[in-house]
Length: 282
Image (cartoon, rainbow, N blue to C red; front, side, top):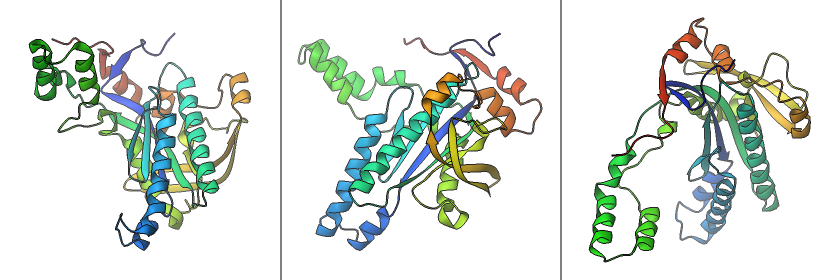
C-alpha cells in the first residue's frame, strides 16, 4: 500500500540538496585586486560563465538549481512513495559534478567540490498569485486591455519580467541545504578536501549498494548536526536499474534515519496539507 497519496504536500518534508563550490575562485579575484576590469580578472569571469552555463544545462523541473557567483545549489523534495526519486537526484548530482570538473580540468582550473546532503524542510508558502494583479502583472494587463501591446508581446513581457523582491521557497527552512553548506565550509581542515563529491550516507541503507563505489568515509558534526559522508568515485546506473535501485532510501526511511524521535513518521504524516498541485487562482 502506498505510504501517501500522489501529490500530497506536507508542512514537513524530507529534502535533498547539492552544494557545488568552485575551488580557488576567490583567490583568482584576489589576485586581480577585486577589479573586474583588470586583465587578471578575465580568466575568473570566463570561468564562472562556463560554470553557470553547465549548471543551467543540467537544470530541469526535477532538478532545479539556484546559482550565486561561484556556488550552485540543486534541490528536491524526496518521495515517500518511491526510492527512484532519491536515486535520480543522486545520479543527476554525480553527472553534473563530473561535467563541471571535466570542463574545469580541460581549462586548467582547480575544479569544484560538491556536497549532497539530506534533511528536513519546513514548507513556507509564498503567494505568487498576487503578482497577477499588482506591479508588473497589473501593468501588462493594462497595456493589453488598452491595445498598446498584443497578446504575444504580453506573454514576452510576462516571461521576462523581473520582480522587485523574490525568494525560493524550497530553500527556506531547508536543513539539507544547511548541512551541505556547513560540510562544504568545513573544507579540507575537516577532511573534505579536493574536487570530490561527498554524499550523505543517510540516503543509503546499512549496506552500501554494489552499484556505487566510494573512497574515503568521514564522520562530521557541526552546529548541532552530524552525519557520515563518503566521497563517491563512480555510479553504475545500469546496475542500479537492474536492482530497481535497491540500496537507497525513500523519504520516510530517510526521516527515520535522521531523527531519533520514534514518532517522526506520525508527525510528518499528520502535517499533511492536501494536494497543492493545482492551487486555485482568483
